[in-house]
Length: 117
Image (cartoon, rainbow, N blue to C red; front, top):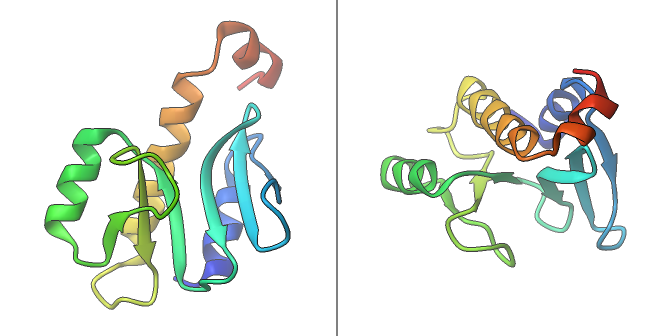
């Protein structure tokens, strides 16, 4: 999977938006104004995803191409090396779905109602 594939997949999620909150070298993907994924453009093969601590531990133990995301909260954000052969498109999509759902589930009832999911 390329970063453009990851971008397209993130934007295919209902009500997902993208912006550049940290300058022109980082694209963030949001649901309800909260970030669920990111692409650090200065590192073109990295994809950053929100995760829960249990998933983080499992993924880091299983895949050498998944590690703690640089500059993000430990065990709540993982970064994936998309150019590593052990990382399939299906895995990236699954982890993206999990990140999206994790953030969506933490939205308030009012925020969810505004999205009309």
